[in-house]
Image 1 (tube, helix red, strand yellow):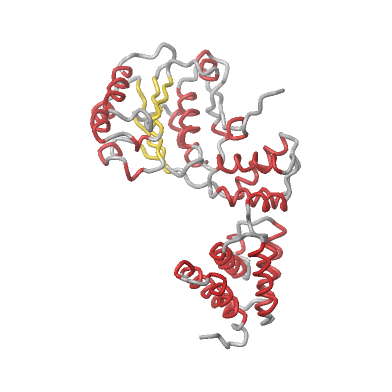
Image 2 (image 1 turned 180 degrees about the vertical axis):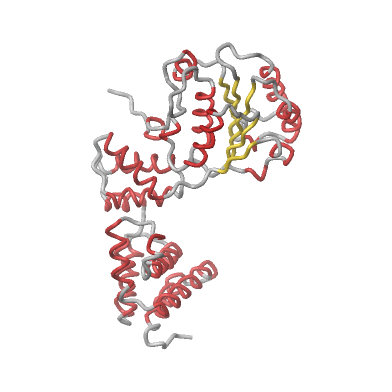
Length: 369
């Protein structure tokens, strides 16, 4: 039986061109290599799973490549590239600061820095989770970071830049990685699905991208999970069922009931939602987000703010035609207020039902007090 490789590893970018959603950073790094304008220390910071360590490895590999392509990518044919691809490079060193955070670990690194590279011009040191270093370790590292040997380049990666000493920050070129856009993640997931010969509905991939909250690694992990759950046939229904995500359809139906002042049907729909195991606070936050999405769908300029698939986007635009701006303002306000007070409520169900009663009376302007 062939060993399974998780998608986050199998489809990990190996070139600057394959990095998802960080174009400005990859272009800057490529320009610095092409112009031979390399700094002595770099700090890659940003949320988890957005490509910090991946970019550090690609950057390190490309710096020492002996035969760069015209696109400033590593050739994968020279001795340096081959040794890197085989995880046998003596020029690229990785240190996990989470488990090697003492002064002794940094002193060992400083001793290693003095050794010149055997192949290529540079020795690159990638220190992941650098914020985990102790204060004493940071201080021991400071002098070497300020005046490293000409052959040494440091690439530090962290999710918590605020924990790093200002004296360290001042000696680094800082690159802030952004959360990856939903559209970019959906496109990447669609590419992975095609290469794996897994049928995948666009709406399902959109739900996965939203659930990942800007982290591509998380999105690929969820993708593998759904592929296993759905027997390699990723549908919207199987995705929301496995991820315990409330179907958009409930919110569309609830909004229609509130517009028709049909509080009876609204309460019955909420009962169905409770029977599916969803918590009231999750429902209220989802309802607030739904009213927001309907509001931005009323104007062609703001409809681009929707992070949903095409079919759901059309549903939002259709419902927006039936809702006044005044209704949406008040409905969003009620849902947000009740969501904020949810934890203090003794009777959670009644608390949410009161919110639905308020929203159902907006059209008549007979808001309960």
